[in-house]
Length: 520
Image (cartoon, rainbow, N blue to C red; front, side, top):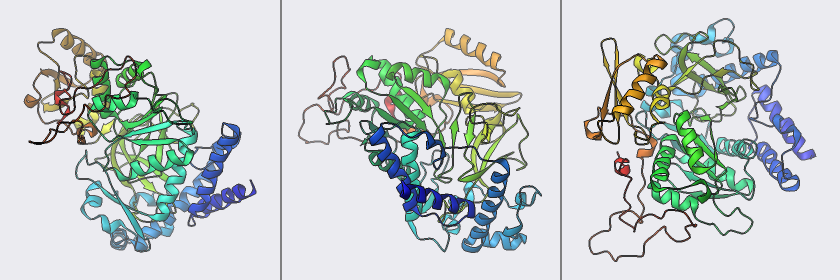
């Protein structure tokens, strides 16, 4: 206990004074949390005070820490990165005088994704030792490269372990399946390390054909000391939608699975998809907000539906993407984030424009996380004025409750005078009842849509946004067999529990009639 207290004290002093964090201090805190879990079966009452757990602090102390953190981060970036050294020199900015209260912080230009993607090395500190390049999936454009040092990775893994215990409720008898793109290096590494450090088991799925993934979720594990089946699933919203589509089509039931929790990230999770997933899998579906570029900063939803952003690891701004002025209460803007030194020491970013749209509350929240900055849940990506007038969340909430709309939903907006036209892929035409329901709900929501065009042929749709579910990964169980190959036994059918639906013979797994073949 004394060693843990000392580690917590050193960590706290590092945060207050913006000194280099000792990863071993965070690792000790995470390790002792796991030990406490093993001895007592539950975290202690003081777990809310652990790193990253959003404990409330005095507003004046927070203001002082924020000012010091921003100046330290700006000073480090201006000294050690090519991009900010040039920028601060050209603008005559002094990092040690920047302040939120006098408006001088706003003189630092917003950093765009385009700038980071164009020359990622210009944002890497010359004082750091790059160890791992983490790439984003690239659904919003060219994948973004972010470099991490070994110390940053160790810090992030320790924080992820604490989050797995306290946020996800992970326990040693659990098993987590990661159903995300295998090229998403950092999320995969965090998921595997945090799960196994808790003492739980980890299974890497990747983004397989949904039929295979469902079969693996339902299959008995037969592992000593573990739950009979996989208990936790981590995935993206669009891939969860593909799983729901296939599960509903094939008649899977909650009793076929052992899932307790499904964690969703990376994309907008609509209310209808959450409800359908909980109905199919019998598990609680949760979401959070994290980005490769801004880790370990993130956002946590509260019971009232706000997204509350941590102040411990970085500074949040919500700005108008056209003027970069602060968004007023009740208005919509883009999340702009500055991850703090000492949590970040390799790729350094000041006022990074994430492109993620949110709305600020019109009045101060009174929820359980009211002491943290609040926004709406992520509404979608900023691509122009139309993306804010009709957001991704607006459209997914509109269409993903409809069984006649294949999941994940495929749609496109085309601008025309007076509003926009919504093009939507449906299972079959004419779909008159569906059209009537959608038009009624569009009017009730006040969406600025001037028309609705339904398609039953995906090739006739205007170009649609790429989804993480499109990053399908091949498996020998479903890959076309080369000419002359020896036929094997059917795969992925052994161990299927009673009542579960088995996939077809390897190489011939058919998609549901409304899944468009499961590929873009």
